[in-house]
Amino acid sequence: MELTPLQVKELNRLVDKYEKRRDYASEEKSPRRTMLVLDKPKYPDYYHGSDSSFRLAFNRDMEELATMGLVEVEWVRFNRGNLLKRVILVEKALPLIYSLIKRKSKKEEYAGLTKLFGSWQGKSHPALAPFFQDMLCRLQKLMPLPPQVKLNDVKGYEDLFIGLKAFFDHRPQEVLKRQLSVNHFGDSKRWDELERNILWVIRAYCLSEEETNLEDETILSEQNIITNIRHINLSGPLIFTTPRGRVAVTAFYPDLGLSPVTLEDMKIEDCPASAVVTVENLTSFYQYIFAGPKDHLVIYLGGYHNRPRRLILNKLWDYFTGKGHTVPFMHWGDMDLGGFQIWKHLCQSTGIPVKPLYMDTKAYLAHLSQGQPMKEVYTAKLSRLLEDPFYLPFHPLVNLMLEKKIRVEQEAIKI
Image: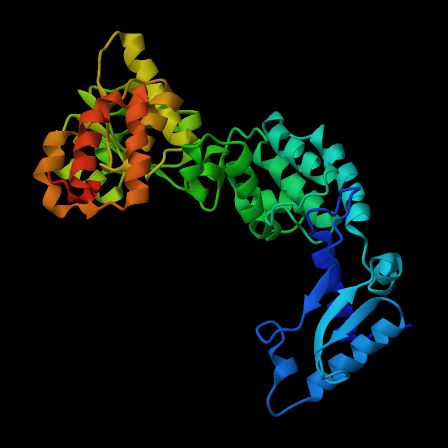
């Protein structure tokens, strides 16, 4: 028998409720029955004041399902045949219901997904092991999958797994998202369609608590996945060579933008800088070029640094240590949670003892009037930095910020 669209819709609603029950996977079922309650908020058309067509069609369709033994109907007292109160699922009819609405049962669907997830578990990056273990545990217990992982069909899941695998692929150079998408899916837009799902998995299962706060662009750039090629801007006394020639950065004013590809073959010939300074924001980068010491080599990070920016820092560090020169490396960023975390990430990912610059109580108090208020959730996160010994250089400043409840962005600082 062919069901009406309304019958299919309501049977699907009943099956959804049944499969979401806490005792769905239990051998001991609750006597509670699965039903749809026809109240006004959920069924406004059923109670339409001047048009009874939907109510009459609904009643007719539900009575037909009851005749087929798929549901039971319960009428409002003294209003039998006119006003429905509840539509109740007949559980013993579920095999027929699944067939009529052309839907697999949750148990059948999850059995297939268990095989699919298990097959990808062994060929995915080790960092994804917690994700697959959690998903397989959920599937075996017939628990709901997170909305970010719940996809429409097998191809959707396979594409997600391909995307996750591609995320962790080793790539020595940056790759544009569109090219990555073509390489792995044969479709330049498929990565963008799955990116939200991919990054949810990465944040939930593969990153530290601090790293989960990183912006999408930063997480992707760590894997050399970019939307557009970003040049590395720098200014100051640096001479380097590549297979294509010799370059003096001071010949370019006020700064020089280098392609990440250039850094791979760069060999530092000379760098008479008295300090290397990384700057978080573009406005402050140019302020430092114009107002800061002229013998400093200044590098624009653009928020969180990625591999190419760390590569040039490591090459500079190796150059100075190789020459036996003690040249300070400093970082200037926002006096806020993100700025402190960027500094820590910079130190840890490069292995260079980078010192904070203009990120102390003196600079903070001098520019307090230009700061921004902090909300309670923000201050709670900030206070946790006091529990981390790595942030010890910032503890006096963090304590002062918690007292004043103000954060100061880098652009407010005048040097």
